[in-house]
Length: 337
Ligand SMILES: NC(=O)c1ccc[n+]([C@@H]2O[C@H](COP(=O)([O-])OP(=O)(O)OC[C@H]3O[C@@H](n4cnc5c(N)ncnc54)[C@H](O)[C@@H]3O)[C@@H](O)[C@H]2O)c1
Image 1 (tube, helix red, strand yellow):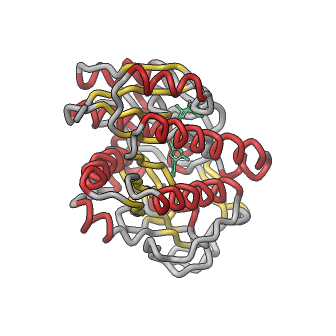
Image 2: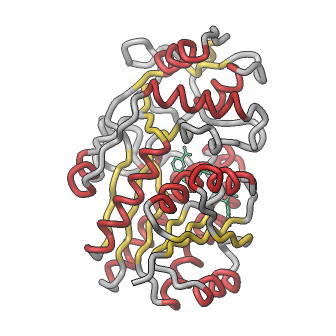
């Protein structure tokens, strides 16, 4: 069997850390990315850390010709599919763009994999598939019911891939539901570099920390939580990357469709995260409490025991490590790559 993995969206935040981890584990990697939300410098960063460079194909994952060419040219063993759009807010404004891109990329990949006879696929899903009215922690069997188009695209893709695996038992598909990935490789050579204004809490905090934004807005402090702010399950991006390697190992032995939460099971409130960041950066983060955001649930924490047991995987990094590594990356790259 060959040892080459195709990673769509491999130049992006989560993809680049996973490509690094794959290369370090001895795999060869082909990155397919259209660089709509990433930079070629992330590939340089990967090489700087591990001395190896993935093959890079600049193409859209909806381009069937480009993808079929990749499968013909390289002997691919498995696909990690990260490519797609990821902003909840943007998906509310332009749902049709999200449905077209997220579902379009996945259908094309599944089709080209079928033609090429490649049957192992790891898909980047999200905790947003869970119904926010469910009682946390969320296990994989918790009720789904996303309240935004982005989450709907993830759920529809999960359902499509489940149908695919159910009619043909040669497929082995992993649906990884990520909670809140943060942090960066400890070297600071790769990290999260959102183009435009970031949407997520950690990059926003970092922008305030380095003085690129005036203050952090806290969306509601009257939730039913100990300090009134929302609670989330943050996971270090390197732990998330290792989770993918563990999932691939499992899928190489077991066919069918498998869903795993990738989270720590530990909740951290928005206020607690701010305090950690203030400690790490040595600065006070200016903040203002504003009204709740539509659709935010008070607590979203994983029950990750299925991944712990089946994948023999455990997150190793503390919330403090996550803040230290993210800050280190941000200080070294104040303007991104
Ligand atoms: N970061 C998170 O908090 C988070 C949480 C849950 C799930 N996810 C999912 O994980 C995946 C990766 O997220 P990320 O944070 O690394 O995002 P990212 O934007 O940093 O990476 C996505 C990559 O895909 C590329 N891309 C986008 N559309 C493409 C297309 N049509 N063809 C080829 N390449 C394309 C982008 O250029 C980018 O390099 C996404 O599917 C996202 O929905 C992310």
